[in-house]
Image (tube, rainbow, N blue to C red):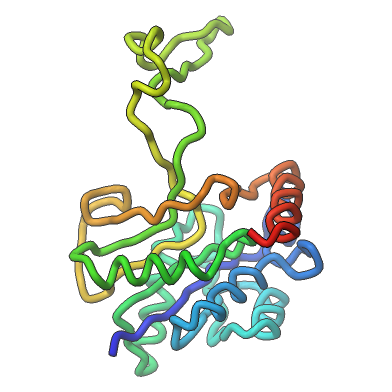
Length: 232
């Protein structure tokens, strides 16, 4: 039977939103929502939080995750990629006799994540020849009619030829939803995540919000309140 592990990276020292991963969000530490969704999915033999912070580790354990190690300093700076952090966790587990077929990286800043989409991603990946399955959502406006602002403060279209085209005649585009990333550990790929080796699991836009600033945080709180009051 296929074995799956969830890895939740949660570094301490957030600058724009202090202690972001454990800041109170509608009565719970933010990271608790990711742990809760992973637990509710019933997909994982282990839910591991990889952190360099003792306080995050303590709270993660309180909400049902395991923290078998504290992340080394060389993997805890602003420039370390998520891929290196997850690889370190997988290697640690392997060295301690724990091998898995699938890993799901879940961001600690995803309070709108729902277990049903974790399940959908896992089932889609298992029943395909893809290597990755990740959360994605549609762009709210056609990217083909977007523009940049030049050094003189004036507009310059990226694709000028699309100015007169109707929105409905332009191809729909999608973006990373920043919630979860499934990977089949028994297959290899040298390609990027957004490639033929990956399949997107499409989430509705009302369940997707990055949390990088305090304004993002407040917007996500409003979204959460509306979604869960209506039981969506």
